[in-house]
Length: 233
Image (cartoon, rainbow, N blue to C red; front, side, top):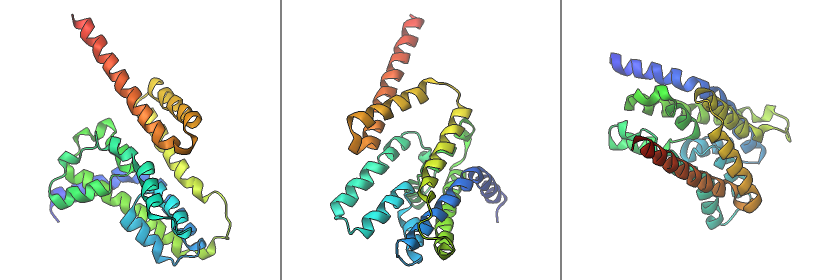
């Protein structure tokens, strides 16, 4: 194995280790829910390997069991994963070389991968390191789901708290981001947008909160630029 490739693999493994500690248990929780829902264990591998949508997979499981219409499934997927549109604005996809590699990198753009690459230290990561980071996170999730499905019989039916794994992981990622980029303005804006969306659009809170938050950030950015331009005059 070439030395540079070995170095990129080693660094990507280290980069993904912290989020892997959350992604793997979350995958285990999903795998357990799959078998407790009456599906064969291998469905957990199919969902996590081919859909790979984290929180959406928990929702899709219920939709599949309820035989929901395709239109409802599509609308749910669009609403839950709409946040990835904003991720793509700053994710370093341009560093990934090759059509196949870029296609996979686009497919594997997850919350965890974005959280790691948004770190200031990641601005210099080469494309291959970014790609392997995504591969390892995908393996954590899919491996956890398969493990949970295979061991699901050992977990008592009706065990509570498994679905909270998604919320717990996102909370940890948010705290890490706040620690790396201290400041109260952006978290306060995010909380305000979430509360406003909850009150105004209770049935579509996630989508409304993201749109509102993006609009507020753009307005804040324009205001800061205007002030900077005025200070230079």
